Image (tube, rainbow, N blue to C red):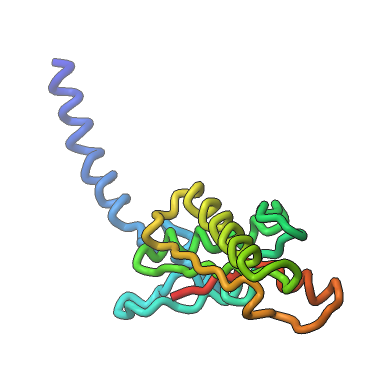
Length: 165
């Protein structure tokens, strides 16, 4: 008798639950996709083109202290935006360029730039981004962001730049 009652209840409520769950639109379930102002995801279903992630493209530089390759926590917003972008676009990749100021020998600056790029790569990988989406290159002091012999110029050149492709 109880089995018959359970069967009647399931017969009544399962179609209602199924109809209710199917009536949700995909954008109601995922607020990131629903947000038309969010440039992370292309909401046009017929487009496979990645929209530029303006915030990431503009804020793509991590600066370092003198002779260090430790990533400062104040750059976590930039790095986490990169993580979000790469997570949402597994077909995309980044190249991390390591740079140094012009003080020090050429080989030391190349090695320092490499350590800086690798530190950023390690951060991204620690957040779950596969290593095949990330490559690194070091330019040492060969491509300065700012020319000059001032501390301001030096500090702008001690950096890692995330290039999206």
